[in-house]
Image (cartoon, rainbow, N blue to C red; front, side, top):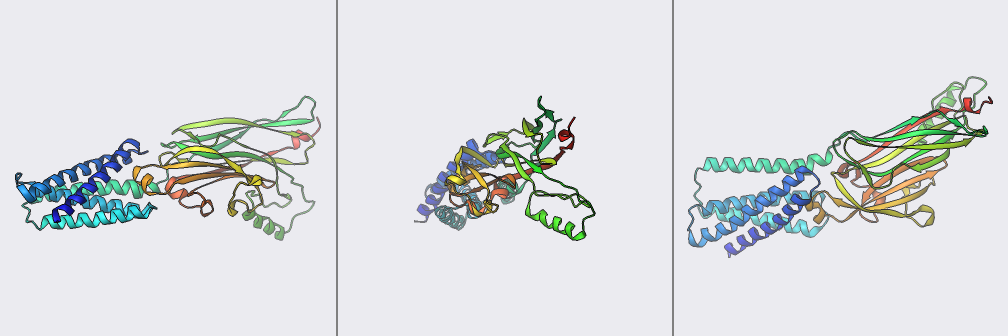
Length: 400
């Protein structure tokens, strides 16, 4: 009976590790993930040899070291099952896998004890112990790097650069245009998905006070900083009124990516009448990125509009903005998480209203977008903002 149970633990461990190992070796998005797949395949081969050694050790004894091979196989199965159980308990969602690996961990621990009780003769025990320790350290280090350290690592994030060109007057002098060059630059060694990006223009009235403004008015201006993306300076004479949205548009298609050490460039043109009431214009840009080695992204499509039934969480409607909603299916970067976690979706909200525009993204299970879980730490979500880049309009509006 003991042999049957030990063989069952060995064979189940072999099949599970081989399945995960092949999946990681062929499909993991990182090199350490591929190494993890190779390690799992090696361990699955060791447990398979251990199963054969158990049969020989219990019944035939045709191979003098079959007991040692069985013990090593049981130890490898125990160590690997425990590490996988830790990872699944930390990030997995499906209870059946936690229960299954919990049973395999207990079963492999019992297998180690059962084989050890048969008085296995270990040749050169110090060398065997050293080999087991070194192998265990390597396996644990790779597991820690792949599952613990790497998800918390944040490399150099992408940048947004805005460069304003000289305004151009229309021939009839009744309108003018301001060209702005936009660059999304990735100076890191990993590609980034562009989940969403936008640039918008704010028109601002800045009348001048005829006398010095009071200190209490400065305090009132400072209190507005936490209520708006606009951070107008405290000024003795300038009266900064709330800006008004002039233009807003996406920069890049949703769901594409920028390769490592690459960039995307485009130009937008803002046209305004010469008699515009604004004293200056301010350009802002924002984008939401996700590391391409942390996730895969498929089926990225338009989901809907907030004014036409599209669902937008409360944290995205605090300013009564309108929003265009996009959604895509997220695939995990390794086979273990892909099988043990529920499907995740990335939802991107391009918000716009009289106060301005912005882009926000969240990765969650379908219907749980309002909780904003895991986006930054697990999938490497990076939100980047640029601006304001101001341009005074007095020289353009002054008759020539």
